[in-house]
Image (cartoon, rainbow, N blue to C red; front, side, top):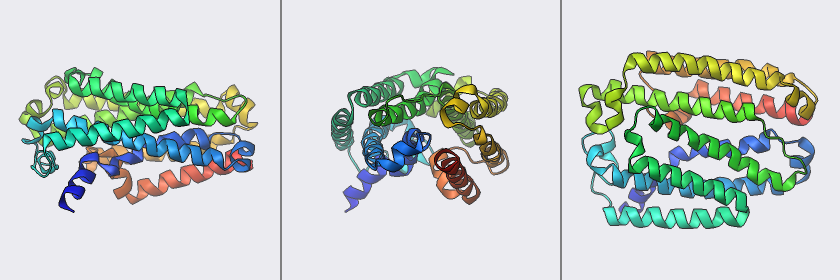
Length: 300
């Protein structure tokens, strides 16, 4: 039982909430497709599970490579690998098994989806193996993970649509938002570790709180503008026959500002996935955004 608990902690299921981005393609698909064909939801759910397996493998592999640094981190040293509750060989076996099953499942669902999941895995392996030490590039690669999830959802839904609508505004929003979250995490690491931050993660030596704060401000504005332009764009009007998605902008504004409040007033931001589940106002806001968007898209 202790070993099973260690394996579960190693693959970090709490972070699998990030993979819910896959359902964005379902949420923004025509109602007649989704409501008339339950297989759309089933396929998206299977894709979510396959992506969870692969992302679990990524977390395990990353912990293997970060073992020495994690032993000196005040929180990460309690993870199963640095704490000695699972061996390096055991962690590698878990990573390999999860990656193999997840990739096989992904390709069985869709060849294109399988390629996207493979690209996600390779990007994260390259990131963990060395590119995470390069300032700016490290957070760009992390942000790419959300883009992979977004277009992965499109790859699943397109099997049920004659003409799939891929909004580049939404893809841009996913990228900007993930970049915002990644930099918020870097800020939390610097604030928590202080002068020891560089010893934990080499790229942190080239970051500063001032730099990150300036970029966070720019990303907040860019994300709001991108999402707002998406809701009123001609392509959105042509696809949904309405610009009523404009009324979902306040939820996005509140969500971003709430996160900034948590970063600066509560010293949060180090665990975006966990924060989504812990912070009730944020969770309620996301749920309301999903419900209002669904009503506009499906029952307009």
